[in-house]
Length: 233
Image (cartoon, rainbow, N blue to C red; front, side, top):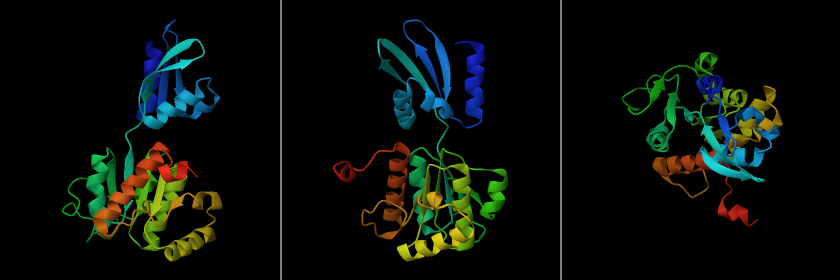
């Protein structure tokens, strides 16, 4: 690999951007494709699929064979609200490979003792995101049930183009949430991205089962795979 290509790949990784190095097996020719350039590339379908899976692979295109070396940033999950469900969710998310951060300005809840397995920040979300913005490889899960806390996480998720935005609460609670955000000029297209009530509808009861429903929905959103029941629709 040329040194310039390696430097470009490393720069993309340090910026938390995905990239793919495509190598023509027959000729050895290489080119770097950034995730923002995928749609305009001749290998676009294969590139999208490997980015979705986060895996390198050999692919065919016409008479040529390419090795796609995929680099995807480590997935992150930001949990707004250091509540009981968050205590169940954080270890499961870590097992699934996510770097997890819990944010809650209520210092009585946001303590290392209650969240031994992840980063805990006892600050207002808007203060945290001012210096630590989220990105396309982040799942945002808001659980505090306090509008002033949760809404800031949702707005940060829209700004950072998080791949998943989930919010705890009933349909009535979510309707009130949407109305609040509309008054803050949040576009309808962004509001439609909120998964609420958060988590797959598996009849979850209790904090641990709700946490399982949430991580299942996050994984489905990341892998962009419809449920079996939806595939036949």
